[in-house]
Image: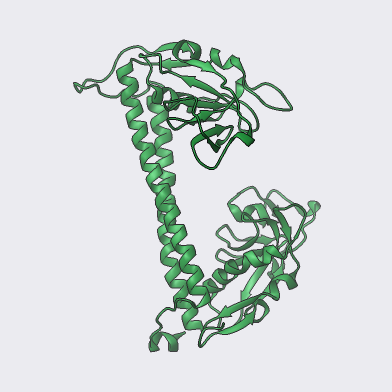
Length: 384
């Protein structure tokens, strides 16, 4: 059903698509204008360059609306607003030009909204790698409000975009701050204050992992034994299901010991089943070790050197010989508290970001289908 005052138009009625150029390897250079390829749409600054005389139709200025018609579903396929430097456009990407009485940012949102339909009709090399023909985009239908309402919709959703952008920057800063804290405190370069306000000065001790924790590979259970409820089961990459029993009552450090994520350090929930795809680093019997401190220490270490096996990467019992550097238990606890607070801040921002994205997605669905209308006063309608 078409909302009152709107029209049902095809993409070809609201914009024009112009393909990029097929730059050959012999045209690539180390200087000149960057050639904008699909990977550059997601922020990669790894460019080839074109030093010849470009045609106007290839040129892309910052802010240009583009549409990648060959890419990875949900990653590099669909509409993008170019935020990089002035460049020339490679093949597999369209420049998008809004027709008269079509607001540019609303057009981006409208194309984003119908991308899922376009993906469903795409021709795929693999399940996630897609490519479409121009007609597959041009023939899509778009509910199109008057330009004044388009502008208002774009302005409304831009409020969420700004909030998302601010939160993303705060989150990136929090990650950087945590990284800096880990580099300072886990190496002893910077020392915290004890309970009396005096800076810790004691010497740190180097120990093998097997001297500060019980290191072992638990029993694996089959997928058929798992269910949709019960205690969480940890595999190589986090929770993979649930089981009616648990093999660890307390929270544990679990290092992935098989597969492509080998060496990843995870923190498990209390009362969980940890499978044989992880090596458990259990400090429960070691009163001089703070488990959370050891978790952060291992997280800040590169355990890749312990990996063996070319076909199936794995970490075995040799992890027991890994060296860790420990201060006294009181300093461990202080460091763990500081880094846990940093993690809590990151978690709060991640939840806020997810919430903002969900709110924007829901609002976008309502506004772009006319289920929810924005108010446009007479003055705005005339100026549009």
